[in-house]
Length: 576
Image (tube, rainbow, N blue to C red; front, side):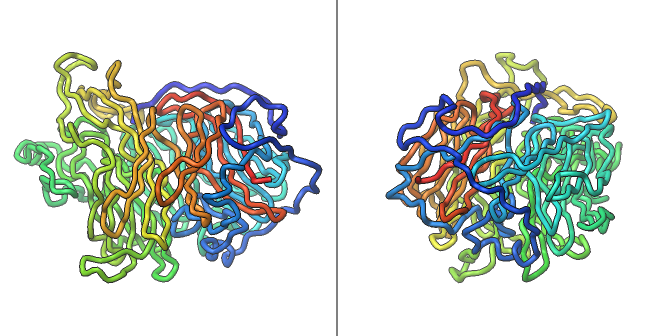
């Protein structure tokens, strides 16, 4: 993924009724916040977090629950009445820049984050601000793909965030004031944090970004009370060579020159110390087995495989480790020796799936930048099946060339480095055996320009560049994960990044880079409702209930990675 320049415009935090904002909506009407008493700040117990999957009132995890299904059981909003959905309130943050936050809601209090690590506590019924925290950034921040923050975690009386300068911060949930701060890694070496933490059994789990800077990736666990480090799992083992695999998870030849790689290994040794392997998104947590599941990003440098011979373990892989010790349980590598930046980034999802014998077993899903949904056996990480491709595979394994970007002879790759499914979390409808994903297609040229490790600076080993006038498109796709068959697909005019939500009312919600936020029928894919937010809706939606009403909330702030229009709004919708 390519680093793009950043910008920050102050907008002034405020909650607005619908009448004060010029937004367009295809169906639905107006509304306002009203005068509602500010809710008390609640504590969040482990029992609440563990039971989040059945909690129709709250949205307690980045992806809804520890299984990360992004299925919210509330059904007040359904396929028949969603056409009446309208804005209840809009909150404008202080930062007009890329927004990827997933609103966390607990007993009427909402926590959201912005780029540059601002955190807001809001009245989830009215959008009124309770408190605001602005992280005081250190002297060094290095980050790929925008100054994003994907959300907060809540536990007991604290709110937790990771920061661009590679810190973990615990805030007092009642005041927003820091309780403790821990250094996760050295940002001068390319480490940063954009992912949301996960809290379970008194541990705060967080990975690291920086796969484009020659880091050595990890997942760490900290004590939720005081920030003490409990264990570290390195996503790059000491021996990264692997089995010299020549085919990817779908059986396609990846065109590796194994003899050249073996010669490079003999000459230069194992590249483990600078091999990348960041972790972009939350792990899923199997509470019964005390194991967590996550995916690992690209090797570094991204496009130049000559400096990193071997399979480059555990990059581009599903990994499971023990929650209490951080010890490896199992892994499965999707792409060995990746030279296309097809890192695994979208969060894992735990659901029961049909095994190879047709019997239900505990499974784990991952939606790849390759455009497939992979279905695994949770016990040993083995691959059971993969879906039909959700995007074109036309030039999937075209090797990068030693040419200048956009040279007529430069290698063209389609659908490009961003996806398939980028970091965007999928949603599932477990009772129906359905998974819902948003995809993107961007035609790019791939070029190699070998350079030595630059000591924590951007290290792509070349460039990937959008082709002027080339394909820039996306889709919303529903997949039966027990068969791998695509059930329906809706094309979109621009690439899709952000996330998706399924609800008990048979509706799925997702947004587009052009500002449209839409509701689809979960069974047919029919568009049921649309709202124009005025900026790219490139964040995962959340659902909750307060005051007897179901709300759908989403951030509209645009996105650096696909350069969609920036904004600074959190928008909440209700039926009345």
